[in-house]
Length: 155
Image 1: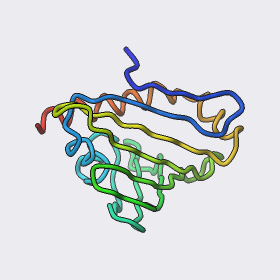
Image 2: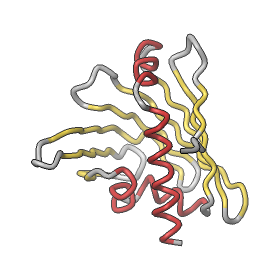
Image 3: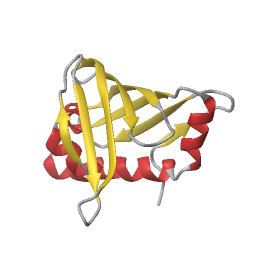
Image 4: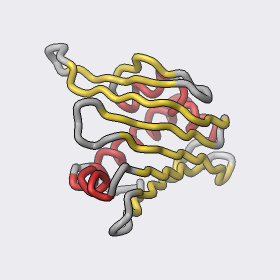
């Protein structure tokens, strides 16, 4: 699988930069992060709450085939500028990863293409490096590929 989503993680720093170009109009890509029905599709998870507004919050969870909770994450949206920027926290429950700050910037490229720039800041270099030891690059690429597929069908 070609990894279209690029991750820039410099040694000795507690943050990383993620970029991806999409063959989608910017307004449609922005909806992938603000509309619960679309979030559920590309994340493969249940959206418990998604208040897409400044000072809003969100909670998502995934259950296994037996209905047992497998994953839960939540956070607070600190800033939301439609079709431009989302600043939020992200915390996975019951993991050692702590809270991270995520800054999403949506960039218009052409009428039918756009770019997502993500700046993710972890509590420590150690936490960031632990995340990078997971199949993080493959996972975010798969998620972004699903966004492209799902939204292409909605165009």
